Length: 67
Length: 307
Image 1 (cartoon, one colour):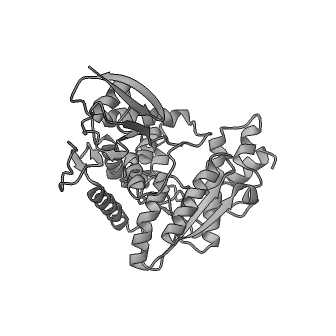
Image 2 (cartoon, chains in turn cyan, green):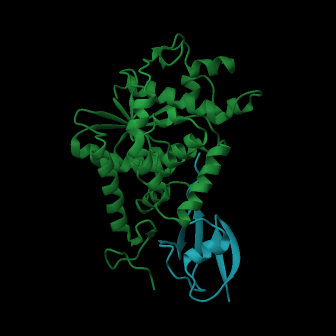
Image 3 (cartoon, helix red, strand yellow):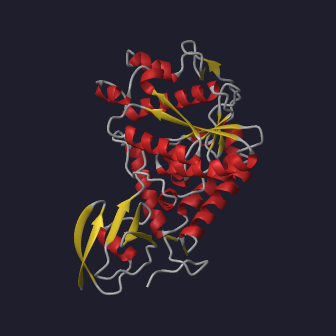
């Protein structure tokens, strides 16, 4: 297991993940729905199937709020 | 190693689970625009000689719609005007109106802002302060529709484009089923409105087949500088429950929202026939706008609020 730092809706959260995880796995681990959130890796918008490594900066942000 | 686009070797910016494809910026924009154009064509939303008003709040959906409508209207030599409503929501609406203004300037689209205070005499913030009233959203929705219809008609516009996306539509369909209100379902759809009358400006919904998250992606890759956030008064409990339910289903069974819309579209004709009462709208005694009753909802609400 490795330590990752992921920003979710502006809040920095430390999580532990095994090697070879993808953005979608991070989302599931954090209980975030893929339908309502998008992800950036190192400042760039990426597919949720993108792999993440310990050195990456992951940002997950909500885009579907309704209302 | 970056995930590659399913159509080229570029870096993917989005994964579309219902089509099981990853798309790069270029191919996503092409796919998004092609789907909107197809919807516009299929439902004959825009014709030569039309004068289109685009209801633009400054959010991702309305701005994404405006970007594509601008291209479509230019290619057809159809006039396009952006209309924004300032409901008077401090700390929220100024920000989105600024984004709307900047994008309209960038696109070269005329932008008109109409305010609640001027047209109705009260802001949403003021309504929210009042005791013994309905939910703030109920007033806001009625007033906004009244203002947009009146402004569009006075400007000589014959169609009003709204940024309702696939998510909004699938939620509305499901909500009407769950509330046993099939007559409301009969009024839903990509074109038209609740009333057929010359006094009523027809609504068109070019994004009806676009999932909400994709309009967010489009707004990002097109650099619209949209701020993702919600109106501070938006808490329609039932719609929120349906939204969460649909999003959970969509995550597990990709394509669910499309299937809800397609099922509805396949029975829409039957619903229209069954629930078409042929009732003609009348003009409101107070304001002269269209109404199903002697006094329209907007005027009844204003009376209740003592404005």
